[in-house]
Image: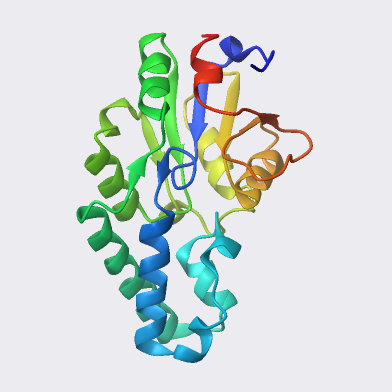
Length: 210
């Protein structure tokens, strides 16, 4: 159990994919189907885990797509992902719903700060039944640069929120984005410790001290 004082935070900014929801399988399938239909040369070297925390646009830019082809790839991938959401290929991490309920019931504000598009994030939140607990949703549609740039978190902080604020992230890109916005970061589902973060083994570690 961590000894960190979680009670002091009044606003909680959660990443979505990989933090609250396990959507890796759906994203992986969507990328592979999109790339397989367009260029099999790239798909042989593509590993979704290398791009966790990145927006869809940034992933395809890194793979060399530009202009009209880039827009087409983004649209196709998002359509595949949304199909897999409706087919039940995503799930909520253990303890996530209980943590959100505890935060809301104790007067905290909960917002989502995600590199997903607004349409994809909203669909996932609705599918998993947690959207009613979310006060605000900040997505890649709202900023010019995704994570690890701090734009998403700065956008969230520009709204009327109650201090102090904490971010909850899983990916390296997400942690850096929050840190670059000068936020404390709770690190979940991590493979290795990132200096300056507050690591937890499970959401129960927070629930039991609130």
